[in-house]
Image 1 (cartoon, rainbow, N blue to C red):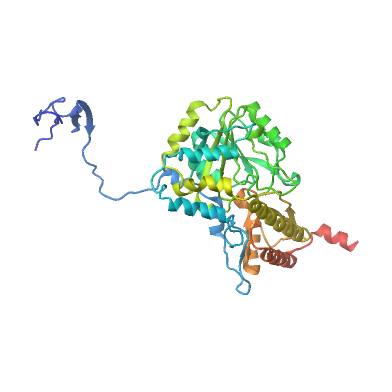
Image 2: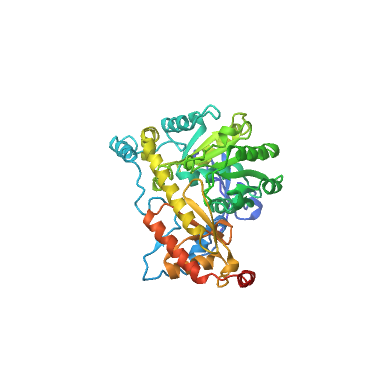
Length: 465
């Protein structure tokens, strides 16, 4: 049977024109050429594939959450004689002691009852909802309009969009060490190199500015600043943030400001958004409802575009809009409720949450400060406290992963090893648990350390003298 090429004219009279192209198909390769409304395209013959060969994409292979990779590899068998106390989960709702405010709940009920928010919204969010967020966060030093706001499916999507719009494969970004693991997860999956700049525990986790600047090169496209910090619980002063902005300005590097814990600072500290201090550095500020309003499962986040000098220009804005269209935006019910959530939540709710977190942090810090071999760092905000392990005093364990693994086995207390944040020989404690649970957990950690602590030889000599 002949293998001939045909031209099929969709708007014609159905006449087949045999051998219309080079007699035996293009170059004799048995490729059919067809015209649709006058356009010619090629249609290769069907694949001769005879076996299944389905492989995961490179992006999926390159996607790794360090926390899951470490935790899933740990042997976590709690002591059956002691109830488990998990100090590892950054979800303030887990223990039920930190409910959101009734005004927040009512706003959601009203949005549902209105039947106005059951359909699709624009991928960047409803215009009215974006306007509400803009008004809530706008200030004279960093004014915002609705066009400067994109609503996202949680702060994590906001961070994803911000990294994706600023970086190409082969570029690099600067992220804090220790720092939130999602930054690296997202970047590496996109073929973006990660460079870790050091935070200084002896200076309440301030940024080592000299080290950070030394990492910048021609392919650096983004500097990530997380303030207040996960996992450190640190809050940067105005002066320190201004120094960071000076480095970014000098090197013409835009900033991604992860401010999901914005305003969650303890009395005596003041929170400053990066944008309110910037005169020229363009900033994509990422935030959301998850932590301050205690509703992480509602998946409402946002990007605030601060670009008074039009350095981002139209390109970055249009890029964010295009990227937002990949999943059609944030939950519409929450968008319908957001005006009431932001404007009607009483200040007392925020104060009560902050007061609880501060009290728990002080209890934890006070208790662990007197435990031989541990060095806690007092936080100033957010929901976390980092504790250093003087590993030389715990020779049974090679690292923080083994230390925290055994802590679960013997005391049923689970703290996240800071190797998950690229910072070995520390562990992170979440301070959202009920107070009595925090006290009990600290007592168990003390008992564990007393059991395994060993003085160094130098310490022994000093004691003998």
